[in-house]
Length: 250
Image (cartoon, rainbow, N blue to C red):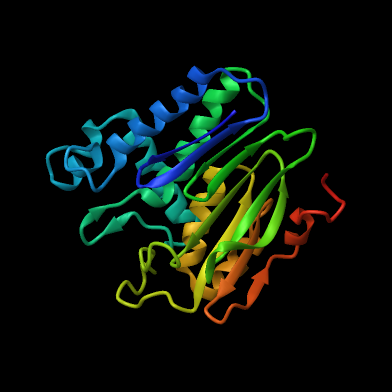
């Protein structure tokens, strides 16, 4: 079963390789609607907007909101300050919420007994199990041609997230130099233990510019693939082990 729906201003795709019930897929989409209503900075009535408007204290917010703020602070420390949800206009937790939400959606399917599926929200993906007894194939998009993949990954039980400026423009910034746009790189894809981990570190690594791939190299159990403004790729030492048809993880 496969379904794609536009939510949170992006396509959200759920594909289940197991025999699936339609209502179980709908439960996942209901969860994403809740996340959007809670964390969208574009909706004046959302919980995060009320915090930014001064109408709600973080201490009085929902448990999910408190969890996101705690995870954001933890990530800020782990990335030496390069991950920061505090902006001039208030808090924007989108750099951590998407991966967190996708992983929680995957947990919903796991609790319902599904073992072989993927959830893709705007190019950030949680991959569980296999499809037709083979690992899932995941494409890394060419940042200079959105209709072309430059690499095909062979993935199972991992998360993949990409940060970049080729779709949404300059929405990621270096917190140590907020006024200087990040132009030396255009995309950075991270493979991690799950999509939450991949997403938060992809955001922080992109904010680091060219040295972001070095940060991913130092992380245990992570791999990365960076494309610079000239189209040159730099990748971590274990990245090739995830390439399709490499014969190592079929």
